[in-house]
Image (cartoon, rainbow, N blue to C red):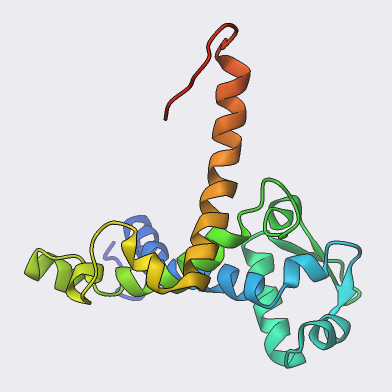
Length: 179
């Protein structure tokens, strides 16, 4: 039997999913920027109430919420109300294990750098270096809001590593630990 050109095999489906994955980063970053996880932290809300609280267009927000639901970050109860899932709760800004700052950093700064990957491969120079910066973190000094976001993201990402380290390594009697 000849395969139809309209049917996609499993390899094609996997590749298509990878190609389209960029929407997930932007969806998550937009939700954090609009404070959707924080606004849903106390109780489920319907789309209109959430749109008012977030200062958004309700039909557009409903589409964003559908995308968030497809990522299992929010749930929809069938009566029009949306709630945070346990995974979505990790995007709240007020929880110790928050990934909100990392989501924003990836959706803004990292996104721009990755969009120039082919130029970096051609030139052998990173996007940051081609834009007059260094490959270290000095470029953050010129951008205090991005630096603050980066520092929040790094704190949130390293907190569980530090806790796991402290729980598994006996430091009794040690006076100094160096990273």
